[in-house]
Amino acid sequence: IPVMYTQEMLVSEWVNTGTFDFLYLPRSGNGQSNLTYACINFVSQEHALAFQDQWHKKHLTQLVSRKPLNISFADVQGLLANLMQLNKKKTCEARQCQPIIIKNGQHLTLEQAWDVCGKRNVWKSQ
Image (cartoon, rainbow, N blue to C red; front, side, top):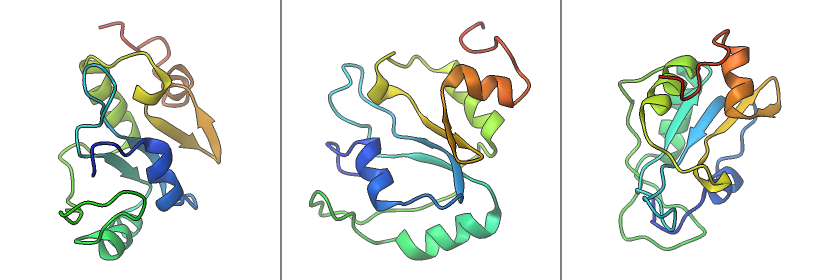
């Protein structure tokens, strides 16, 4: 992913029709650029495979990049597992550094996502 891409730019290209519930584009320490990869949690394997078929070795449209996308499957699978992985990392508190979490068509904060997953008050408590 080109370093100047934002999560909002990705969402405008990767329109979510209920296919994923988590999208995270990690940012550099100062938040000025991304780390050139994103994590998406799809709600089914079929949705993940369809996304891979559509985007693997393709280019995003809003910024030019010489390298095509390389879509691969992560070791971490599931909304709760992704939240727990994120909880282990140091992330900046700015809005652009936070993941996009969607459940039942509603955008959730990290705290709300923990509640939905039945893990109230877990965020950054470790």
